[in-house]
Length: 327
Image (cartoon, rainbow, N blue to C red):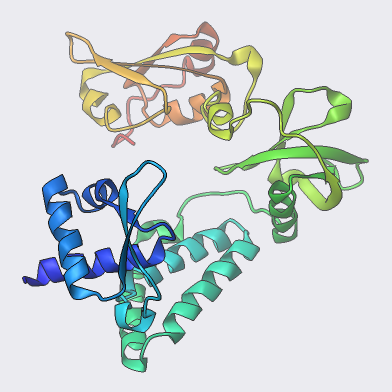
């Protein structure tokens, strides 16, 4: 057996031991990117090399392979990638002031390290640090609005319920509001998506940096019927939403900028098409003209707003020809 096949067999054993219902041939094929016949050969090797393999049938009469009473210490994989991933996630959580999540991720990372031998632990930490120091995104360069950790923790607790919240929003001496949180939109500016019942059924956006205090109430509420945070977020270009501005957006990138613009996803539901002259037409539906204008400014005079007229008027006269580089 080659080293690669041995590694795959150990990986299969770990999957069969960790999944309560075991693993099927279809799942093995998908996990390893192999044919159905090769998956069958792998399950035969699994049965030949592990005495505690059990083959069962699920409700759809598909066979599943499960390892009972696994011995984790003997199937322990190297943890470098896991430790790196947890460290990156923990740093990102701290950067966003999600301290509760950061602490949980750090505890999990530390737990993994303590299960390694001193030699492997030292090597894993050193390898993880080397990778992290090379990832510029960990530093998250650029401006951002600070959020209060004590507010963020309350928001997460309320979303878990979901529970209503009492917040002080806007001015520090403003009257409290009771809101029903539906989600968070994280970006250059981050927003709480929530319903404020005394102001109607429509969802509203509250800037997190303007929430001065928050209290999670012991009172649950029903999430708005059919609500999807992804669908809701897609209604805006950035985080700010204005229903009056929602509509079709059409941008034309000049030929010299077309290939660069084609590398961008300006919106999850966009379409892009080259014209005969080499320019690129990008279309999507969203609101938030101001955030669009902020982004379009970076393209200088290499982009033209075809629709809507309101956005075209907003950027008119601000396209510069002297930027030395495209975004």
